[in-house]
Image 1 (cartoon, rainbow, N blue to C red):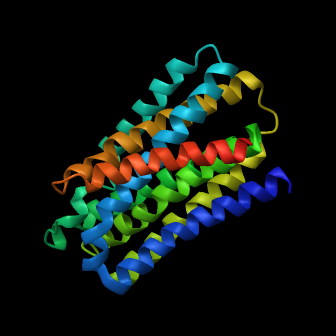
Image 2 (image 1 turned 30 degrees about the horizontal axis):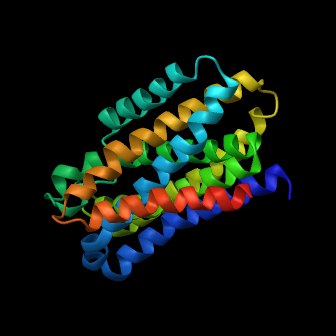
Length: 246
């Protein structure tokens, strides 16, 4: 299969994962929110595994300035969330009056759309580098797109009409394949060093997503269940890496 097919196929799966999160909220919002922290914990483990086992080593091999750009990726997403107010974390469990959150809902949509758009570009970068890296990166994106879909829709329906929230949430899901499609137009001409820079930024963003958005969910519930799901995520990614790598 070609790089183009893999990028579009797996980015579409990631987008559908977001839409699946929306569907789950529609079917049973209370139940989904009750157990969402387990999904976030597992996703955090997968994303940390992708970052530390694959994105960081590959970036360091291709670029002498990888560490600087890992930090830049982390800071870019920090600033994005600080301005756009987008999280997959515990605020989905709290509700405010509809009128007070109307503007916040639209701003959050903008941030989440851009976030998903970047996820699509990350998938494109992974497959342009190596099929194995692309596959594992896609897995990390898909894992956190599901709780992102839950977050997006749960927040939107608390700040705007349900029909509008549904349309905007689906748009967030479509942003991932859109970002992947656009990545195909500029990735071909990049040097190895620039690909390394892009991988470093992607790794920094994964580190931020895990540390800021997902891991805080492990503290929402007392006990070792959340920690266990996070560790299972890391171990699963490690074992899968060994299997794919032969």
